[in-house]
Every structure is written in C-alpha cells, then in structure tokens.
Length: 307
Image 1 (cartoon, rainbow, N blue to C red):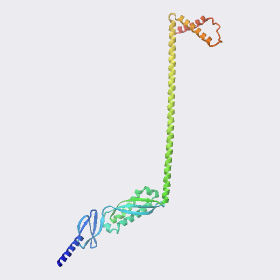
Image 2: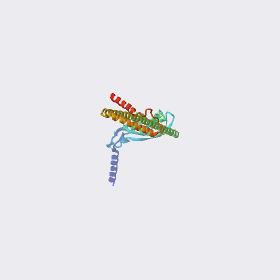
Image 3: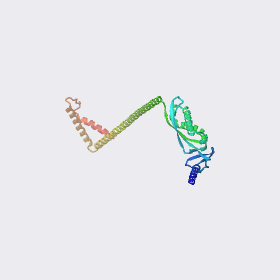
C-alpha cells in the first residue's frame, strides 16, 4: 500500500515537472523567460524545455499586427472650434524584450500618446482643414507615436481617424453654407445654360440670315442671267428675222411682196382703230395710200442697201 502511494506521488511530481519544463509557443508569438527573476531568453514558436523551478514564462507577446481603438476625445482647432474625434491605431511588437521591460503597458502608452499627438495636430489647423487633410493628420500622429514607441519595442503601422463630429451649431452653419454653395452652383449653371442658349439662337439666326442672303444673291444672279439670255435670244431672233426679210426682199418679186404686205397691214390696222373708237383723227394724205406704201418700201430698200 505504501509503495503504491509512493508511486502515485512520484508520478504526480514527474507530471508537474513536465508541465513546468515543457513549453509550446504558438506561431507568431514569443515568450519571455526569466531565470530566478532575471531576463534569460525569448522563446519563438515551437517546443521548448525549461529548467524546472528555475525558469518561468514571465511574459507572452503576440507578434501579429494589433488593433487599438482610440476613444473619442475633444480637440480644439486653430479657429477655436471644439470637435470630437476618435480613431484606430495599428501597432506591432518588433522587440519582445523591450515591449516587456521598456514600458509597463504598451497598449495604454500608445493610446495615450495617440490622443495627445492628435490634439496637437488638430490644434494647428482650422475646422475646414480637418475634413480635407485627414491623411496629413494621420501621418503626423504616426510619426509622433513611432518616435517614442521605438524604446518600447513597438512599431506603429498606421493611424486612421474614424469620425470627426463638430458641435451642432457648427454643423448647422456648415449645412447652410453647403446649401448656399449648391444654390450658387445651380444659379451659375442655369445662367451659363441660358447664355449658351442665347448664343446658339443668335448663331442660328446669323447663319439663317447668311443663307437667306446667299439664296437671294443667287436668285438675283440667276434672274439676271435669265434676262440676259432672254435678251440675247430675242436679239438673235430679231436679227435672224430681219435677215430673212432682207433675203426675201432681195429675191425676185420680194420687193413687190413686201409692198403688198405693208399695204395690207396698214389697212388692217386702220380698220382696227375705227372699230375701237367712234372718233378718230385721219391724216391729211389718207387718200394717198400708195405714197405711204412707197415711203415704207424706201425704208426697206435703205435697210437692204446698208446690209
């Protein structure tokens, strides 16, 4: 019975010893080992055997990138406007030993330094710039924290502002300003549209007037060309008619036929005059029809001689 108890005790002691000496470190983690209360070494991922009752795991650190929420805080801009700003800080342990012995709580230290750096950065710019220059504010906070965090074995990867909340009065004023700006842009766009419309109409009227004048010009040119061609055709026809009459008169019996034609036309025309009016003036030598025909014949002979 005594030997059984002794065996159980020995087994328990062996189990405790194994638990104390065998350490498994997970991936992307590091353990800091202290030997008799003093830093001894840093264990990386894997299985490690410690000296029982001498070595102990003092700190456990993750070497993965960690996210630290920075609580909302009041910041005063350069134009004395109080805004509420919160953000997110991304950090990573680079030196495990420094993160354990360089600072008591690197989470708290990084968070507090992020808040003070943010207040300093916001105090240098106006309210309008806080919305426009987020990237520069983030860079300023990262630069300020990273410089101090080197002694803590911490690397600040980046900082991002989440929300910027101005006071209600400022929000109302900004809304009014944006509304006025939108109305201004709308008025400008409307006036530009009306201006362009007027220009287009004027250009259209101008082009229409040019086209009409060109059409009128071409019409007059065509009419003038037509009249000139008409005059030429009439002149050519008249000249041909005169030539034909002259040729006919030069032919045998032509002169006698011309005299007969003249006498016939004279009598016909005189008869028409008598039909149209009851009162008419009769030439003194009306009875001398032969003399009138002789005069006309003499004119024809002169035309023939000139030809």
